[in-house]
Image (cartoon, rainbow, N blue to C red; front, side, top):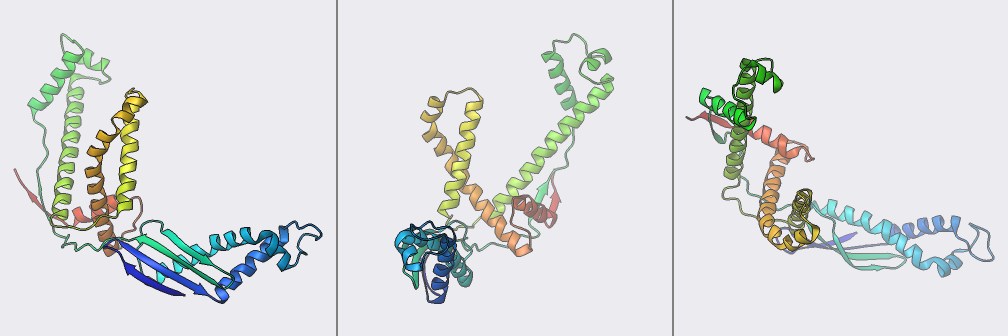
Length: 292
């Protein structure tokens, strides 16, 4: 196999691949034998038609089957040999095939090279989460007003599913604490990511950005539909929705690629759970400092 690699930009490569001889010939022989078993040729029993007759009747379908089986195999061998970290299906063109030779061109997108900085012992400023009596009182007063209750006592709290006013107050305090804790966790992660990305500039693979944009657009349109907005109105807003989505999609792809590179360095599996696992790893190795 002969492979010529041309770098188009930081995320795209062009591969010109050619194979000849036994590999191609053997694939033709294998496909011919498969076709011969089932081919129905006038004047011959199944499996008994000679090869020249089969070529006359089935040459086009045999050729297509050879291409279907051989091109992916040869392409994967070429990518492996060149050690390219391909992230999307290739664009195949200029395919040429005869009984002994196969050649084609493949344009592929690869993971960009990212000059990621030291990500361990990154500083995190955190705040101790607490809930004040005033916050609990405001939340309880809000419940009281929404229920139009004249008095807040054990009887009223039982109607809400709590055995007593004291237990209701504890539940409200827990709810506020969990909400504030989640907000603090989100703030920490957002600031951590922003610091991780600071100064990192690299070309984003077009296919990943397009896929992420498409997924986010589909979800945004679904959310609008769930709110009862008519389809024609949603379609009218598509351009405006896209303008808001595209920057977010690019940022999400950038974050994913950076986290994926860290995952590979640290031996973390790059699967659906990778982003969460990498964040857990990064936070566990961070330099946590309490602030007021």
